[in-house]
Amino acid sequence: MTFAEFFYEIKNRFMGTDVSEINEHLAYQFSIEDEEAGGAFYVEVKDGQLFVEPYEFYDRDANFIANPDTFMKIAEGKLDPVLAFTTQKLKVEGNIEKALKLKEVIELKVKQDKKKK
Image (cartoon, rainbow, N blue to C red; front, side, top):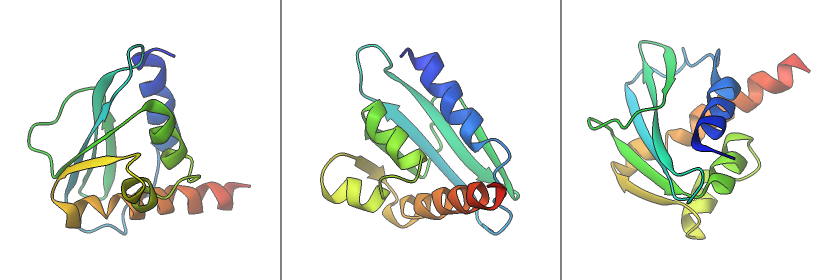
């Protein structure tokens, strides 16, 4: 899988996620460590909306570093990001308090997916 394919799969998964419950600004960069799918993208929660874009984000709260498989499992709700961090499958740089809010974004998406079923 190329970076573009991976990115658009993640973007399509999270587009339309209702993050209106999150009342603070969050900015995350995801750095993918992989020869084929390597690259970076960012996720931003701003004014009750979620943005996912294929660029580096220099004014970020946290940078998450992992391989594509780990990121996909986290995005699907199959791997808790805190567990991924504690088992060293996920590296985190930056504001740990804000990084922990990633779990809230994932949980909102999973909850919304379950309602659709």
